[in-house]
Image 1 (tube, rainbow, N blue to C red):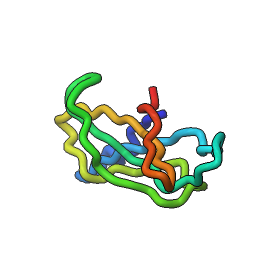
Image 2 (cartoon, rainbow, N blue to C red):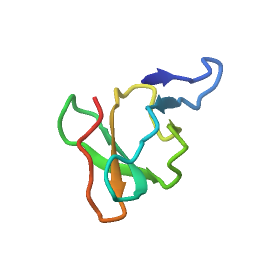
Image 3 (spheres, helix red, strand yellow):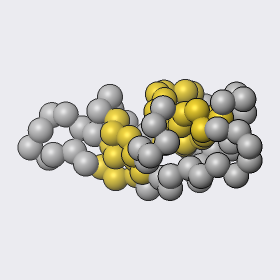
Length: 88
């Protein structure tokens, strides 16, 4: 889920991302959420930031431009270094 949470009266645009909290399905332990961002639909995603709290299921991107379209994906990494597939 992505929402524009910018205040129209402000010059500081922001994007709010949220997702379902990860639940471990194997013997490994949660390590971090990886936030990926792109300016191209479904391509060229690069690691943008990480979140180490499993309970935090949101991210606020304040490093955006009001004239650029951004696309986001989230993946989970476990303590073994395995990364899930990208979110939808």
